[in-house]
Amino acid sequence: PFVGEDYAWFSEGFASYMQYQIMAQNGILTMPIEQAYANKIGPQLKWFQSNDSAATIAAQLMKKRNFPAAYWGGAWFFKLADQQLQSKHNTSLIHVISQYQQAGRSEDDTIQALLTSLDKLLNDPLFSDLLTQFEQAPANSLYPATLN
Image 1 (cartoon, rainbow, N blue to C red):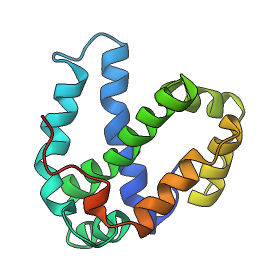
Image 2: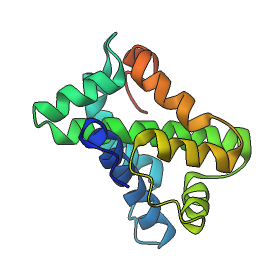
Image 3: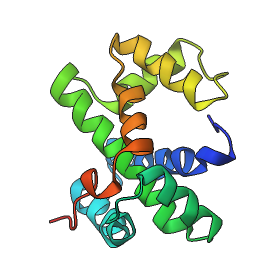
């Protein structure tokens, strides 16, 4: 769901990340999924090599109408979430989102409500903790300088 203008980078980052998940799942992605993400996220990493928080940078990019940087920079949140889901819970973002939808939680209209619902599905504050990092930690501690 859209979780407010202040978090448009989050909503659009989700959409950007999921487009390749859906294309891969349906067999229409014409390259390896990691390459597809590298092609889109890689050029935007330069914006996040800062001591400012990722959320602050993404919001500034949105105000400057640099939508590709904000959206694909936001997609990094979901890339990290997916990695953590796989390593900590042996599941995927697609699976968790499917559970979320089946639970009828699409009425969540704030980022806090959304992340609380996702965390409850896992019995782990994974999503809330990751947002805290995106709001407080230096972006350069979350984003690599390059993607190989």
